[in-house]
Each structure stands twice: as C-alpha cells, then as structure tokens.
Amino acid sequence: MNNTLLKSKFGVISKSLACCSLMSFSLTASAIEFKTLAYAGLDNNPHNLSSALDSNDEVFAAAGFYSDSNVKELFYWDVGTTKFYYPDDQRADVFEVTADVKFQSDFSVYDVPFEYYIGANYESFDKTFVSKQTGAVATISGVSLANRYDRDTDGYYLGLAYPHDQNLKYFIEYRTENDVFEEISLTGLDNLNNTETTVTLGLNLFTPNDGYFYLDLDYNIRSYEERQDRAEEDGALIAGTLLEFNRYGVDAGYVYKPDDRTRWEFGFHYVNRSTNGTRYYDAQRAKISVKADHRLADYHFLDAELSYQTFYYDEEFDQPYELYDEDETQSRGFKLKLEYSWILATLFDTNMGFYANLQAGAFDSPQGEFVYSNAKVAAGFRWSLD
Image (cartoon, rainbow, N blue to C red; front, side, top):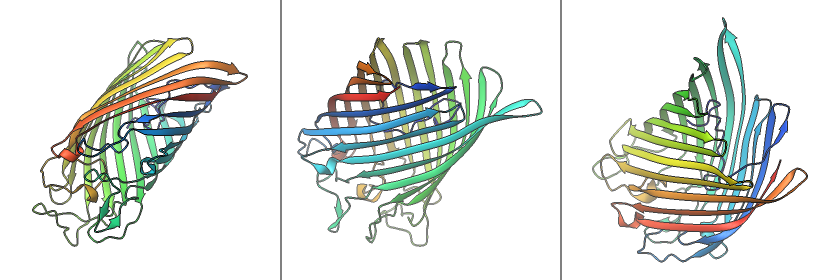
C-alpha cells in the first residue's frame, strides 16, 4: 500500500486529475492546501470503444476541488470531488467524491521507538455503464445496467511502524473496506457487494539523495455478500457457494529526488488472485510505471506519467463482460499523462494559473471489442490558497 505515513503519500484524490503543483500555507509545523481546477477539452473516445464501433470526438468540461493537510504532523486529511460533464453525450459523465482522514503519532517501549496511525476513508463513484460490444448502455434481457458500477466505499485502517535506524523503517498495516454497488434485481446477474480485508507488510529504505526504496507485500481477502462461484465448464452459477477472492500482491519501487526541482518515481505492482472454489476467476494483474514531477522554471510545472498494465485469466472460460467487475477483461496496454501548470498571478494568499493536460492510451485484447485507443486534451485554470 502506498497510503502510509512512511511514504508520505496520502492520496485517494482523482486518478485522472493529479495536479502539477500545490501551493500551501504554513501554520506552526502545519501545512494545509486547497486547490480548484476548471477546464474544458476534447475526448476522441469517451467510452473506450473499439474501432469497429462509431466513436465521435466529444467536447467535455471538468471541475474539481481538492484539499490536503498536515496539522502539526498529527492530523491529516485528503479530500476531493471531481465532475466530468459531456454536453452531447451525458452517458460519459463521471462524478466522484473521495475523503481520507488520519491521525498519527509515536510512542516508545523501553526506549524502542514506534510510530502508529489510524484513519478512515470514503469514496462515492457515479458513471454510466456502456457496453463495449454495442456502444449503447449495457443491458441484459432488456434490463438496463446503466448504474451497474455506481458504488459507495467506506473503510478504516491502522498501522504500526518501527524505525530500525535513520535509513530503514518497517511497518504493518491492517485495512478493511466495504463496497456497496447499485442494486439491480436480475436473475443470473452477479451481486458485487463485498467486504475486503488487507494486511500489508512493508519497508522503506532511505537513500542519501532524499529518495527511498519501498516494498509492500499484501494479502487481501474479498468476501462477497451474495455472489456465487461459477463452474469451469460453462460458467453456470454453483448453488450453495459464496465467492471469495484471495489475492497476493507486491508493490515495489524507487523514489528519486536529484534536486529540489525534480522528483522521479519508478513503480511495479503485481497481484495474483485465486478463489476458494473453482479456477473460473483465477487471474493475474501487473503494472509498471514511471512518474516525473519537474519545475521547469519559476511558476512553471510539468508532471508526466507513463504506465504499462496487463490483466489476464489463468484459464480462459469466456467470462461474459456484463457479469463481472468492469476492469476485469483480458487486455494489455499503456497510458500516458502529461500535465502543465503556469502560475500567472498571486494576490494576498491566493494564486491563479493556467492548467493543461494531455492523456492517451492504447490497449490490445484477445477479444476484439476490447481493443481500443483514446486521447484527451484539455486546458483551463487552477486556483489555490497558500
């Protein structure tokens, strides 16, 4: 997990709207940041459809509010809300709210120092489920699945860290989350409501150049409330079963800061998933990424991220797309994101700037309907309080 005090990563903020630079104002040993983004642009494939289906260039607008805090190195919050609006195709609209609050402190036992933290998180996600096979709102037996992936997530976590010395820290974290999806009463449609429990063992190794290596080992159990296992032969539901995923994961990487203008991060993520029943859902997921944050000059900031990711089932049983989690289709591909900020004016404790981003991706799959490419470009303004 990268959401630990050891890595100083306190983000559940929108995955597509990370800012190039956040201005902050200082209290005594505190920093609180507020930021808003508003921009408009063009999206050439808002539903990530294959070339076999018509996909028009769509104009969109987006707005978001975000806030981070570090109050006396004891209390943290990380909250945000983001809205994407497509005036000509409202099926592509997305609305997301996220919040993470955490308290952390330290103590000693026989002069042995420890650090601990406890926190809670919440997320609400709303979008329309569009079928990759038809390009229309997904349906089964004439019943709309438009709200199939609308969900609310809440949970809590706690962790304990032991600083071995100035360069090495170990930690253990326990996390539990509940996912509640929009209820659709349809025979044969999987209910995705679940509870996840994750235990993470990790370490941070700090280097002289203000960088660090990190390694996290995760064991995750996802227990579904009503979802049944499926037979390997034909994917039929198995009566009397209750599906449970067992997932083993690795997060590893290196953060490198060659100077006060630049930050690099090289990351690797891998998950191996099995179940307590048949092999129907057994799968693997992997991702490698490179991120860079760079101050080009005074008031000019550039962020970049390039990633390659893949998901595949250990056994191919022709899993129907509409029945499962949205991102569990066999595919592999890359994503590129560039973000640029230019602070134009400052007034009292605020500043206003120009903001632009470019996103692109391309994915391949054994199933033709999941082969797609997309590109999105936008420009607007950012405002922050410092």
